[in-house]
Each structure stands twice: as C-alpha cells, then as structure tokens.
Length: 327
Image 1 (cartoon, helix red, strand yellow):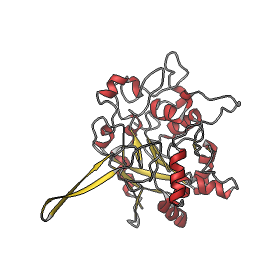
Image 2 (tube, rainbow, N blue to C red):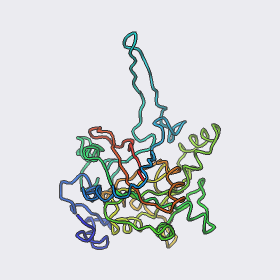
Image 3 (cartoon, one colour):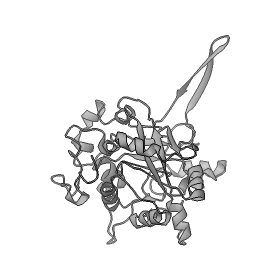
Image 4 (cartoon, helix red, strand yellow):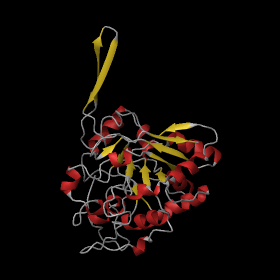
C-alpha cells in the first residue's frame, strides 16, 4: 500500500474512549505486520540499485554486548563442549532477545486502555500473535536512510548530551535530513544516530559498569532520544516509514519530555505507544551505526540497501535484527 493510498495521520480515527489516533484496520482487521506491509518487493528491487561499492556494514553489536547488560538483565552464558574426540558443539543460556541490538515485536507493549496493535489482547499475544516471527518469516529488504542527528546537532552548536533526557525533536530530524540532502519514501527503514552508542563504545570497563548500574534506577537513568510521541507519530506515518532503528537503548528519551505547554505527558504519549502500538511501526534499539555514519559522511550518501533477518522465534517479543547496510 503506497503512502498516497493510506489516510494521513490526522485522518486516522481515534480509538473510542481515548484521544489516540490509530492505524488499526488500515492493513486489515487481522493484520500482524503493521507498517512492515509497506516494505514491498519493489522496495527490495529499488534498494538493490543503491549498492555501488558493495561495502557492507554490520549494524548489530556482538550478541553479548552491552556488557554488563542494561536494565538488570543477566549476562549471556556461552558454553562450548565436545561431543566426540574431534567435534565441538555449543549452546547459549540466559539469552535475552532484547538484551543487545534488537527489534521490538509489536507484542512488546500495549496501550493501557485499548490493548496491543490492531486491538489484539493479552491472551492473543500469549497465544503467539504479533510475535517477531511475523517479520522474520518474510525478512526485511528495504531502503535504509541514516539520519545523523548527532552530527547535525554538533554542527549547529547543540551537541546531544548522552547523560541527559535530551530530546531530538522532529524539527531536528527534518533539518538533519535536509542538511544531508536526504528524503524519506514509503517503505523506508529510518536509522537514527543519536550519538549514544558512540559515547557508550568509548567507555572503559568502569564506565560501562556504571552505565549498567544506573540503567536499573528509573528515577536516575537519563537517555537522549527522539520524540515527542504524537508529533513523531504523525511525521513517520505521513512519510510512510516502515520501521525505525536507533542507536540508543529506548529510541525515545528517558524521562519522557514534557508537553509543549509545559505539562506532564501521560504514558500514552510515549513513542513506544504512539508509534509502535498505535501505528504498527516496529522500533529497533542499540543499533551500531558508527562505521556506517563515517562512510555516509565521507561520500555524502545516506541511503543504502538494508537487510534484516530476525530470529524465527514463534511468539517472540523481540529479536536480534541480524541487520546489514550495503552501499
């Protein structure tokens, strides 16, 4: 379904009893893919034309990173053992599917009043609906667009603070895209470099331990990110963005930014709710765009072929993306 064939965000109906605009039903009453429906076979054909040098950039962190894990998760354990005199085997234990670079499945969270994407309920999700396998079965081959928000903010004298709830606004994103001479098209995967990953990768062991420790404290933990939810949702939906990947742990800032009038934004205005639950746009976290960003800045090309093959985990709430950018 093209962008032109879909209603604009302001034309989407509100869920009864809420002020939430949703795309529920736009792709069908039983749909579980959400905006990934916009990644058509033609998107793959078009993305292939962006490959000029064949240079490939892995966008996942090693599966055991960040280390120590964030948010109180246990570290992954990898065991190698012999099954005969000349043959080895191995297994992993304690693999959190959202502990490293990840896609959140549409089963990840719900609107408190209305449920999960497309009106599915908790029992549906527990039965396997909206799992990451819905995306994994088809995979993703699309045009990726890197918006280097960190580089743009540096250029205008407002560097992103990795230790605060620094809001990267829709205005920041649109200005960064214009500065790069980039544009968004229907079916794109939007890749946002906030600069958080560059900061994290530059930490020593003590710094990473401190980052892990503070991530467990909701009141003290601060993260930069994109938002606010309603404004971002409108912009992404009207542009036809299919998926959003960011280089930080939550995509959005922590804590949630105040409303424009200074009031406190309710949880229903979080990016995860407005974008993923209400519009069906999957979110990706902890992507590593550092090498890719350097290459894009070097030759001024911020579009590329992006492939992603999440794990075929039935009913999975998330998965490593196994993502590549090919230029």
